[in-house]
Structure formats: structure tokens, C-alpha cells
Length: 495
Ligand code: AMP
Ligand code: MG
Image 1 (cartoon, rainbow, N blue to C red):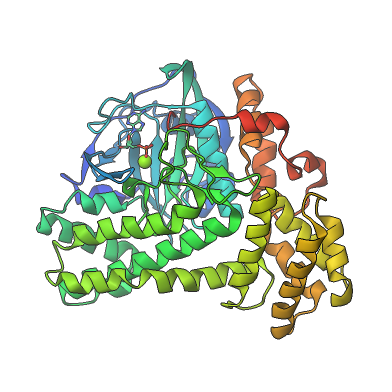
Image 2: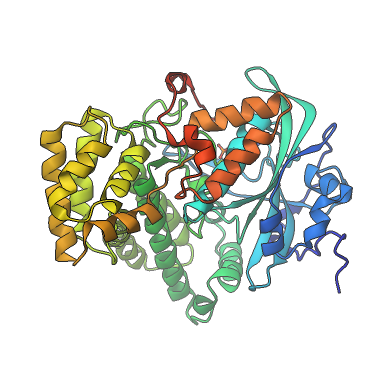
């Protein structure tokens, strides 16, 4: 039996591919490492001995302070803001290897911010507390919402100075995912069909086992591309339905498993604005909320272009790419039907959701609060005859009755077509529409307290975000609208 105080035994994970895909890199130590957060449940789920995470050895390993640790950086390229950026790679992420959970799931472990790699380019290989706390909380918040994402296992703070707009301190985030392979890994190999085949077959064996058995290489690549397209379309529909803006949808930040990956200047929206831009550095507004599904399609086109190396019949790839509108329409029908409390995916959910979003945008209503208010109002409403009044009362007066009431009738018509009473609809909506999302000002509160030596706000916020559809009365302030100062928070790519 494994010693429960010993580090997990790592399999190589993607490092098994060796050079040129993954190159060995030693982590660089930080000064005065200390825990900011430890995700014991995830450690256990991923097959790490639970008591180990309490040990000084675990702290040293996950701070990057055990220099003999075999670790690897992988190489990828990508399109950034619509332009080919050439080689990028893991500039500040190191792969420790992989573990396997009791359920058979394989988890790759990465240290983010553990120092320079051959792919650091002009960067310092570090990440600051601010951005690492945001990534930790956002990963776990996303998971709490049931949306596919990389996970956060641990966060170590340090005193190592890091130069950004001001001098900050380094943190190291341990993040886990079944795979960190990005569209950019394939884009990097566009001129090397053999290497691409090696990477693809490895990805297939690890994560798309049924497709690995397809004998013809071109068909194999095509079938995989179709699966990536579906997963990406699903993810987009889920982001849209929860008001999430990623902020940096470059192709190097797109996971081939359809995971939310690389949390930078992301935002869960406050007031709804379809053109909301979460990233101050995105001056052209390429990645605003309403563009995300379309950008994902553009990114898939980049992936398809790379796969030309394996699929000589480019027409087949073009045709596969043309599936996106249908895949996204289906994903939307699933996501918005759930959001509206319908028991099954339904295309007629979409116009109801769209009418609501138009109304919300016109009056700048809060995305999360309004969806939850509607959920609570209906859950408490025995009869459709009273629904408009209930919903009206639950919403702020800035949303005019003459627009809210006809919308409730529209909702009622669809719900009745599906045989749902308002109470049933509302109760299902309560299971899907969160009370809590990680708004920028909430992350900021956790960051400022942690920087001042108090990680308890981070801990409390993390706890609430694990079950975001539950009320958590002790933290009612986080269930309310953002304070006025929230609008002044500006987020750029600097992290
Ligand atoms: P991002 O915009 O965070 O997705 O990063 C784009 C590229 O820049 C990736 O190759 C990252 O590894 C790299 N990068 C970002 N920040 C740093 C840093 N501080 N040090 C080294 N590389 C970095
Ligand atoms: Mg990135």
C-alpha cells in the first residue's frame, strides 16, 4: 500500500511523448512559501494520498521548491487576437506528471508560475498572487457551476518579488486537468505531419479511446475534429448561459477537451451587456461576450487548418467545420432550456431566453441576479395566473412592468407546452441559476485580504462557490449587486 504521507506516484502524462513535445525543466524555488489554499477533496479525487497534502514535502513540491522534481514544459503555437503568433509554449507552466483517481480518471498536474522555461520568451515564468487567486477561485467556481474546466488543487503564496506594473509577489498554482493539450499544440505541428500524428494518436489513446481504433489516419483525424467541435460548441453555450466572458480566446487558450482553460482577465458579468469586454488589453473588442461562440468557430478553423497535414482531402475538413452552427444551436437548446427550468433540451427555449436578454441589455439589468430572481419568484408561485406579478415583484423597478409581463407570458406558453407548472419550473431553475458567481469585486476582496495576511476571505468565497446555487445566508452580501467601486476594476492581460 502507498504511504499516505508520501507524494503521489506520478506517471509521465504528456511528458511520455518526450522531445520535441515536452522538454525537462527544473522548477525554480520561491522565498517563504506558504499555503493559501489546499483542495483536499480534489487531491483525494485525483488519487493523491489525502494526508500527504498536509506535509511540508507537499508544500515544497507544489511551491516548486524541490529542484530535483522531474518536470516538463510543452511546446505550442497559436493565433493571438486573430493573428498568427508563432511559437508560444508553456512559458510558466510545468507538468509534474499524471495521477489516476479511483474512478479511473487520469489527471495531469501542472505548476503554474514555478519559474522560467525554454518557452518563457520575454516573461519571467512567474504568476502573481492576484491572478493566481483569481484562477484558483474561478476554476473551482466553474466546476461548482457544472461547467467543464481545468481544476485548482493548491495555491502557494511566497515573498519572491515579481515585477508587473508595480512590484508584487509570486504565487504558484497547482492545476489539474485530464489534459492541458490546446488547439495551439496542433497548430505548432502544421508542417510536421509525422509529429502531429504522434500527438494526435497519443491524445486519442488517452482521451478519445473509441476513436483511436479508427484505422484510416485521415478518418481518425476527422472524427476527432468533429468531437472537439462538439465539445467546444457545448462549452460556448454554457459560458453564454452563465454570463462568463473568457477575455483571451486565443487559440493557445483553447482546450481540445472543451475545458475552460487559462483564466486571465475573465469576468462573470454584472450588468448585462452583450458587447461586454472583460479584457482591457482587447482594444478591438474581439473577445466581447456576444462574439465568443463565433470566435470559437474561428479558432476551430485554425485547428482544421493545422489538421490539413493529416487530412489530404481538405473538403472533408471544411464540411466538418460547417457542422458548427448546428452543433452550437443544439448546445444552446440544451443550455437555455436548462436555464429556463425545462426538463428537456428544447429549441423553443431559445427565443424566450433571447427576449429576456434583449430586455435585460436594454435596461442594464444584472445577469445573475435577474435570472435567480425569476427562479425564486416562480418557485414560490402556485399558479401561472400569478406568475407575472410574482416575477415583477422580484425584479428591480428599473425593468419596466410593461416589458416584463409580456415576457412572462411568453415563458408561460413555452413552459405549458412542455407541461410545466410555475413552481416546478422555478425549482428546476433554482438548481441551475446560481445565487453566487465569482464577480470581479469578490475576487478583489479575497485578493486584498490575502495580500494583507488573511486568507480567510479566499477560503469563505471558495466554499460558497462550491455550491453556488445554494443560498449561504452567512454570505448574503456576495449574493447582492456589486458595490459601486466594482465598476472601476480594470483587468488586463498582466498576470
Ligand atoms: P496567456 O496570454 O496567459 O495565455 O499567455 C500567452 C503565452 O505567454 C503563453 O505561452 C504563456 O506561457 C506566456 N506567458 C504569459 N505570462 C508569462 C510569464 N510571466 N512568463 C513566461 N511566459 C508567460
Ligand atoms: Mg495561455
